[in-house]
Image 1 (spheres, rainbow, N blue to C red):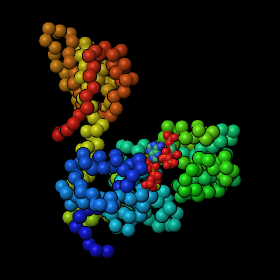
Image 2: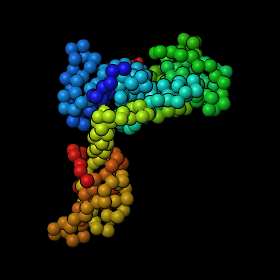
Image 3: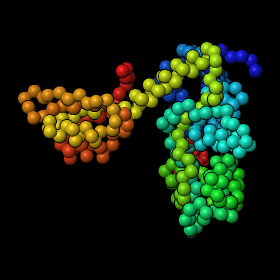
Image 4: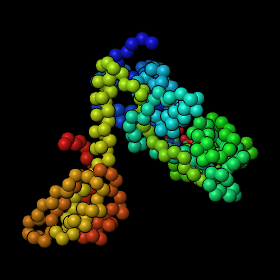
Length: 299
Ligand SMILES: Nc1ncnc2c1ncn2[C@@H]1O[C@H](COP(=O)(O)OP(=O)(O)OP(=O)(O)O)[C@@H](O)[C@H]1O
Ligand SMILES: O=P(O)(O)OC[C@H]1O[C@H](OP(=O)(O)OP(=O)(O)O)[C@H](O)[C@@H]1O
Ligand SMILES: [Mg+2]
């Protein structure tokens, strides 16, 4: 293969991960000019280009060296790794970073009327899936002999059609399962979009670009998951309130002019602040609570 000096990332052309993947790269300061056929994006701000492809092709493109990196669901990457491992080979593509979007899980689901009391309930049954290697590996790990039936799509209707007794497919809200009179029996993999890359990083300019990109991705993810919390509280309640916050920087406490028993608290927290957090803090004495997004952060 021709040597390359530009880093190349495979991203999903359309579908669920396409836009969020490009959005993440834009937040990392990458700017692109798209080719007329919309299959290639030339990096204008850095020597990093994109190849726009079907998500199923991404692990293979990295393994073959056509791309250095890819943004793909862990479910797709893990399936490829499990298929390689089942052939007795060592997977050449690794997960470098979880990216925090495209969250779903790969689950075994069974018809409502099937009694499921654990993996052994599926012994001797046919299980339809688009993820044959992961499904077979889960059965093997649980010592269950079941038949894995490969389907490329519409897996959920297989039990109704009589081509399978159960399925193993992606679940997010669970509404597809409900619509097909199925229920989730066991989650076999928690998934989200991940940055995937070759086990061995390129040992040239591309290696440096990769390091730079990883640093920026880490920064973007940290900021995205960070919130600035501001509130007022009686001085005596501050320790209790601080314990209710997700982990983060040590809070700043400032006196409030004219209210000697009350202080203002300001804290950068890493992780979601839910309504439940706010209600718990209110019960602990907090008032005037504000939760703000963080745009940039530098330690
Ligand atoms: N319901 C869901 N909720 C959240 N994430 C999901 C859901 N379904 C799938 N995903 C994640 O998004 C990825 C891409 O899903 P999508 O449906 O776009 O794939 P696809 O139809 O195989 O696309 P392609 O045309 O690229 O082959 C999945 O591999 C999974 O990681
Ligand atoms: O638990 P839910 O929120 O219902 O999501 C699960 C469904 O989402 C995905 O399909 P998608 O919506 O992408 O449709 P497709 O696979 O038919 O393209 C997946 O293949 C499941 O069928
Ligand atoms: Mg696909």
